[in-house]
Amino acid sequence: MSIPAEPSTPVASDFIREQVQRDQQLGTYGGRVQTRFPPEPNGYLHIGHAKSICLNFGVAAEFGGICRLRMDDTNPETEDEDFVTGIEQDVRWLGFEPGETLYASDYFETIYRWAERLITEGLAYVDDQDAETISAQRGGFTEPGTDSPYRTRTVEENLDLFRRMRAGEYPDGTRVLRAKIDMTDPNPQLRDPVIYRIRHAHHHRTGDRWCVYPNYDWAHGQSDAIEGTTHSVCTLEFDSHRPLYDWFLERLGELGELPRPLAERPRQYEFARLQLTHTVLSKRKLLHLVTNGLVDGWDDPRMPTLRGLRRLGYPAAALRAFCAHIGVAKVNSIHEIELLESFVRDELNRISERRMVVLNPIKVVIENYPEGQVEWLEAVNNPEDPAAGTRQVPFSRELWLEAEDFMEVPAPKFYRLSPGKEVRLRYAYFIKCESVVKDASGAVAELRCTYDPATFGGQAPDGRKVKTTLHWVSAAHAVQGEARHYNRLFTEAHPDAQEGRDPLEFLNPEARVIVTGARFEPSLAEAQPFQHIQFERLGYYCADPELAGVFHRTVGLRDDWAKIRKRQG
Image (cartoon, rainbow, N blue to C red; front, side, top):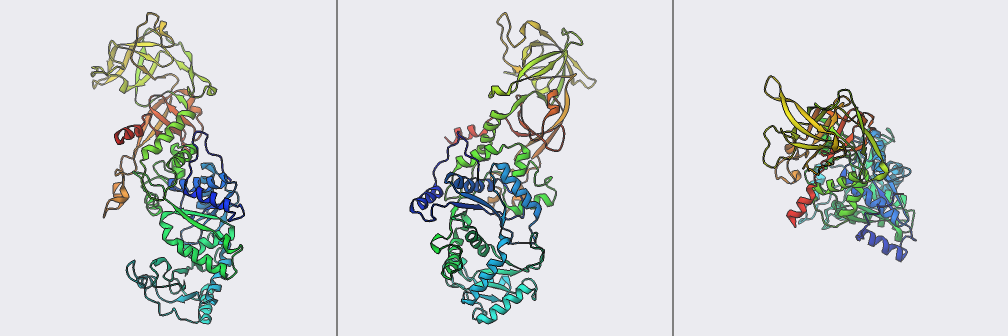
């Protein structure tokens, strides 16, 4: 099941959807449409997985079908139940309901039996060579492979050895089961691929019942067939694997092993994976960041994981809209991260309530405002959403303003506060800077101002104008907190494409900047975990789910993507 696409983001047609439509018209699967999302539970999902999730669940929903979440749990050394739980949570957060989670390990017994059937039909054999030797014998794209010396073993010997492999008689790496196809095939994937290997490792679901585990190419297509998948959609790097996917299913279908007629077997289709600038999506590299303490964990807001993006404040609706916008293609390309941020910004502008926060405070004393007086001013929560209502903001004699909003000697075209100049305070009055108080070091410590009570609401009765409206926080009511600002995790736009260089060499030491001592308007003391808030004039922020008073800047107010489009244009 899945949620519908946002009304403002119509789903464009693509070659996957066109294929599904053709199959429905031809009645290939009796009108059925079934897709699947099959992650390996050896890490948490990242932004690249979001595209596959949206595609698989989206296609199923659009054509009245179903999409299954299946854990490809065939590598016991690296998989963990915590990753399973995290993946389920991430899929649901993105907006899709996977129903019951399925596992490749559910089918271990069935696909083991099918492997034995291949042996009895002379289509598989046990090889005693090590991985390096087998790899060398496969040849290359311009040269054929070389037959293994064990390729001519009898059916009886192969069955005996394979069963003894399962029984645990042999150590890891001493024997494998290979499909017997063609060592001269132009596609190296068909040169007697390994389909089982020995692994004496505890599995997160099956425990110690198995010590032989299927390889991806063997488990994947057979799992699809068992579950009834119609359209097996994967990324482009599996294009060369498709003939092997088909070979296994065709042989099993001819042998009468498939649960459905051979004409209804699953078919694989490949699409371009999602790639972003300034981003690395290799699980191995991301694991290195976590295990070596270069980030705070899988949900660190600097990480491109879905849980990291959620903590940073990305709305799931923005990710879905972005994936719909970039579409489904057959050629890999890299998208600017600024494009993604533009979708995030648009969604946050729609849903975020506004609050006033001063990050770098300087004290302002309004000398002609009555001491002890407090006015509660009505402030709009979200001008984009009238239903969000209003809130009460306290105004008093002493305020905090941004230090950057004052210059003692103003630069040209500096229209904010300076001695003798007047500005408007958001929701309140005009104020004029009358004098400056400095500390012993000569730094500005306090601004002495006056206000014009006739300008309440931002309009002067005499028609005089000011060029700037500043945000502020009442000093007596302010809540102290922390803002965390994020820059690109990698300094290079294409860290994976630097020849001879490890992408981790381009980690940005300034990827996170922590701002302490910020002053928040009092309503932010009640901010809920993951609440999206626009700090007026500063950017969009998200309340940390665990650290009270900590807010992560999701994106700034400026649309960098608009500038990039203009440059490209």
